[in-house]
Amino acid sequence: MKQLLLVEDDEYKATDLIKNIGQISAEAHIQKAASVTSALKLISESSFDLIVLDMSLPTFDISGPGGGGSPQGQGGVEVLRLAGRLRNSSPFIVVTQYPDIEIEGREMSLASASTELTSKFGVSVLGCLLYEFDGDAWRLPFQNLIRQAGI
Image 1 (cartoon, one colour):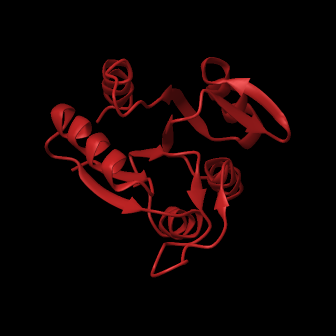
Image 2 (cartoon, one colour):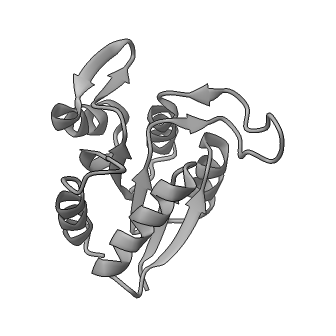
């Protein structure tokens, strides 16, 4: 059984991504993390066949009114940075609602971000996709990347 980690704090988007993963692999076991801290804890404790990562994440899991710590527009970059330091070999797919990713003060398009993230942090980023709640353009590329990961 393939082990997947979904790092996403938006419940609607998480449900949509899980539905799309299920269309490719009904056998996949999906664990969820909703913050930078919970993602890094799971990544340090387990290995995954694939990690689907959002870029905008709170520091901590939201546990009540005002919980979750500071929202980080690039919390996913921090996950990639620390996953690289842990020498994590899991492939990543970045699915974000932002058309650009900022890496150390430099903005880059999603089209070029996967190469830069892979090179910069020593992790395998298969692709970076723009998620749209009301659009379907991301679905087929997402499913193709899941297949590419062997899920």
